[in-house]
Image: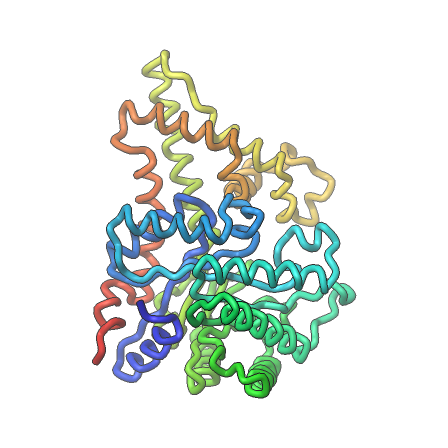
Length: 411
């Protein structure tokens, strides 16, 4: 299997020959999404990246229940289930101080959160991750609204890369690849001048510490999309690509969910893109669809006891208080049930990824599937196919269909 840095160099070479491909990184925020992404890779004969945040997958199990080790094991099990020998790349997403929700909630100092991140880097290396996203662009020691200095971002980036390389050598592990930067406004890298400054400092420090072999293959940058916008800016992407391509890197976009123009990613030279919440929304809608089927089933067959899945899911989201993250200013005085039906549905859909592994939710889901198996070949497979269809949209837009044929070619 090619290293990701080798794959990036291949993408750069292919572009000079008129072949434009962007890699897709699926955020594995549930078991169903992980399975669907493997299935989609198999059917498309394409590589697939899996960008796992520390909130999703970490030493404490994250909200998915996976540690780094069990996540990689699950990925390998699905590869075996689908008889897929092709490249699947487990990756760390947003590895940096205070980017795991529990760190600020527990009041971690800089030293404490950096120590936690370093232990997670070690766990990621031991588990066999192929890519580490080093992202020290949040600084909770600053005043509200105060931007972190770019030189500090570079210093901490190098510190974490140096630590990871030291650990990799200590553990006698093969080389890994790196991703740096962020498109978050708080990171200060959205400005072209700051972006350029960051790269220059990074190169200088990695050179001084004899770490240029760990130069990142992906640089994350602002390309138009964020949490609240969905239009990708091809001109900005092309401009940024020109800045990093000469060093063997390509730009990677986050917040690619529901993007209006995904087909513009490969044509503008984007190396990769992360998609996550969109697939949870698809999983939620698929389950909503089969809940409607269950309601009809229960009317025609009174002996069937309803699973109550949607009610259980909503209660779990509300009880978790995760929905509070998206509370709007005009909703501050309202309890969940006082919100509009549309807002409640959106909040449950968005917060569902945090509680898919809740015991009550798992039991209700199993009951839902059991009920529907009386009239459906496989309710589970129905959900998987809906997610695969959503992933396929990006596979097509990014020119990934049958891409292994050219990516693994020696010509």
